Structure formats: structure tokens, C-alpha cells
Length: 501
Image (cartoon, rainbow, N blue to C red; front, side, top):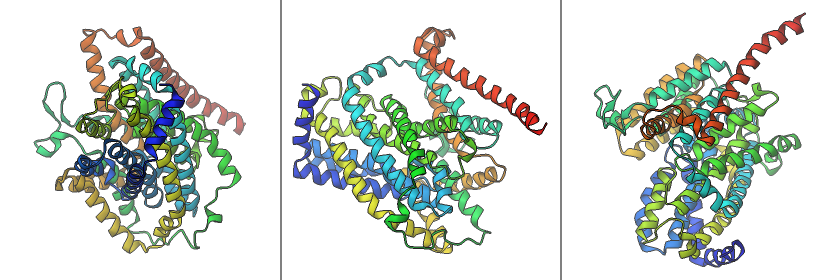
């Protein structure tokens, strides 16, 4: 079946009234749980999974998928307005989105995230349609050595996320790596660095870490500050519209973010969170003035938002075509398919064309629904800034506690997020930024696992990382970034002395 015939089959399947209804339910719930910090798509899909027993397979998968990519839209709302990432992939949006809100440009920030999310999603769907077979073939070429090299490249790029000293950025990356080693070793089954605390045997909760570093620390920092609302006037369509300069500054980041997100989303084991951080690192590297990042640069939200939404679409490539879930949410999607007697794999496209193409067409319909839903609600979300801070901050703490508790139903995670928040406030006071640490925390365990697997397969031969072409190119690119950073650091004092003379 060629692409055009497949799309026609998918359109017929996706336009069924029940499928449209469940698509709307999914994207609406996804947006809602994305706006509420800490709950996330994983918990929501887990709760909805039993419901799928009673509805047709296509409608069930369309609804669950709508929750997943709808959460990417809503996750940036709390990140921009409250400095709270609604989803892990929107954590990087806090860096510039919240600063734009404090400058009175919350409406513009939310408008651009909606547009960037929509464009990234639609282009991601286009790549999913056109390059699904090729992307699946490329994913099969990635072994443990390639994954290790890719993760190492990500950690090298992570040091550029910090707007201050690169040394501080690298220190936070190392701290993230150390935190990622806490928990049970997947190879030996030995508990590491749990200090006799049973709850730490499963590792540190990513949601608790993100909520604490971005949310609790902001509340603590604001306790002794007399703050007024940044929004003085009613939000109208006119003051939500970006300027021409904003549009010009956002076009290329959106396209680059879509490319980054499509690539990382299609690789098993990566996902939207890694894609958004990588996109931010790319934008900061190519920017003429990197010092603007972290202070309200619109590129810092346009690129990552396009990336995480493109990744949310292309994440279905390994799940559907290879039967390999890219993350925990995709694992649940895989479980939902198996519940209905559908076996994901290379034959899914030919054996279940109504499901495969119907799901892809529903992505486009769902994203149109999301844009129609989100744009009129921007004024409602921005109105949150008018709430007095003495009321808003206790509500934030309640949402954080409920969100973190709902992940594992464990009070220890609530205590952990409080402790992480105090630590985050201390790091913020010392000008150490949280974003590199979060990326180190996410990539560290994956890098360690693939390093050990590579050495096991090569019997301890380190040359396996340079003998494999893809791995060698990734390592070479990482080395080039290091050399360029050193040269740039050495040139700055020279240029400064020339200017002074």
C-alpha cells in the first residue's frame, strides 16, 4: 500500500464519529494534565488503560496518543507562568518562558509555544509518513556503542545549557550523573548509594527532581520578596500576537527543533525530554548572542517546544514499526496494543492498515483540535498571574505535592521534592543552573547501561567505539564541540585586551 492510499484509508478510519470523540477526549485530558504540574501523561494513561478494554482498538489508541502529545502542549503553560514544568520535556521551557512572563510577555510566550508546538507536530507527522521505513531502518543500525556515543555527545552539549560559567555547567552535569547512579544496578542487581533507605532502591524520581529544582526553589526564593503581578491589563488577541522580530527569530529555531525532535523521537530509548534539551543546546550554540538565553530569548522556547512535539509524534516509529518502546509512556501504548491482540512490528503497516494510518491521520486532526483549544485559553492561563502570590504559592505547593505523590503513591517522594527544592534554592543562589543537571540525570543511566553493554559485547575492547562509523562520527562531533569551546574561551581574553588597547 502506497502512502496516498494509506492516508485515504487512515482518513476514513479517523473521521468516524466515535474516533473523533475519543481523539477530542484524549487531547483535552492531555492539555489539562499538562497544565497541572507534576501529574504527567504516564499517570493519566495508566489510569485510562483499563478503559480501553471497552472501546474499539483504533479509538483506544487514538485517545491514549492524544493524551501523550496533548500533554506536550499543556506542559509549557505552567513552565511559562509559574516556573513549573508540567512535563519533564517542558522543564527547559522554564529557562526563558518564565523570564518572558516576568517581563509582561506571557501572552506572547504562550502564543509562540502553541504555534511552535503545532508546526513541530505537523512536520513531525509529515516525517513520520514520508520517512517511517527509513527511520526504522536507521534505528536498527544503532547498537550500544552508537547509543553511548550519542549520550556522551548530549552530555558535552549539556554544559552549554548554562548561561554562566561553562565549568559550573559541567559541574552540574557531573552532579546529574552522580544522582543518576542512585538505585539498583540493572546489571548486577546491587543497590547503589541508597544509604539504607528502601525508597531509594528504585532511584530518584525524575518528577520530584524537576519539581523541586524549578518549583520549590522558586517559591523559597520568593518568600521574602514583595512581588506584584506582571500582568496589569486584560490579555487580548492584540497583545498576544508576537512582533515581526519575534516571528523572524522563531522560524529557524522551530525548523531546527523539528529536525532534532524528529531524530531523537524516532530513536528507541530517547524521547521528548532529551529532544527538548538538545534543541535548547543547539539554539544556544548557533545564536549570535548566547547571553540572551535564560533572560527571555524567544528562541529558547520556540526550538524546544517544536522539538518535544515532533518527538512525541515520531516516538511512535520504533513502537509501531519495531515493537520497541522509546520510553515508559510508549511502553504503555505497546501494552494497549497487545491488550487488543495487535502485535506491533514491521508487518503492522500491512496487516493493520486501518489502525496504523488511522492513528497517523488522527495525529493531524488532534493537533488542529489542540491549537483551537489552546489559543482561546491563553487569556485564561495568563490570568493566573493576577492571583495574589500569598494565595498562588500555597496552591503551587499543593499541586506539586499531589503531582509527585500521584506518580508512585509514596509520601517519601513528597519529602524528597522538599529536600531537592531547598538544594535547588542553594544552587540558584550560587549561580548553578538546574538544566544541565537534569540532562545529566536523564542521560547518565542510559549512557552507563550502553557503555557496559558495548564493552561486554566487545570483550572489553574500547576500540569498538571508533571502529563503528556512526559512533565514530558522533564522538568526532563531540570532540569538535570541546575544541571549539576551548578555542572560544581562549580568544575572549585576547579580544578583550585588543578592545581595551
